[in-house]
Image (cartoon, rainbow, N blue to C red; front, side):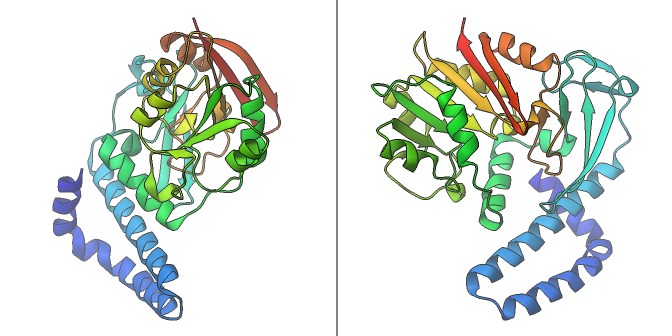
Length: 292
């Protein structure tokens, strides 16, 4: 992907840069009156916008596909059999085109995001969290945690904990053995109760895993759920909350899947898990899974 972008940039710089030179100049003018941190964020945000403009130009040069394959269940068919969902990314990612699988009901996309390698996707998150921060989701995370019916003698992991919520601090203050897991360094503040690698989680030997606004970000959700389940004992549970069990909050390219209809059951079955409970209360939607 990086090599393709470099070649495309060299061949089309004259077409692309005039539009962005003006915005870059405005960004620099604004940044000159800002502190160094704000200046870095403004420039990085501009770089993200330029990068995604180039990606979309590359995509526009390709012939439109006649057939699609579902990114979750693998079902293949003519593109017209997959309903289209269009949106626009508020995080400088440009237009988003997604499709719904007629076989499992999941909405997946966009294609450029799904085409990124694991390293490229990690870089996207590192850049994103250097510019943007998430809202406080403590309340939803607490609800996801208590859906595990926890025991204070056992350990639990908040998967994708970030640093924007007070969940871990509150729970540990109440005597719960809760730890965070955050693989993206720019999303987390270094602290003793946060883990950063799967090996650290394995050594902790948690009894349960909970998350909020994570499942929709996973590039390979079946494989990731299997990996999470492998860290748990036979009677361990997982609790995953996200409003993306419906087609909501579609305005970010980082939401790769929306688990509508039959896709929740497919996801659980393929990960060798059983749906123990599903709760919907406004924007709070939570899926509790256990091993077979």
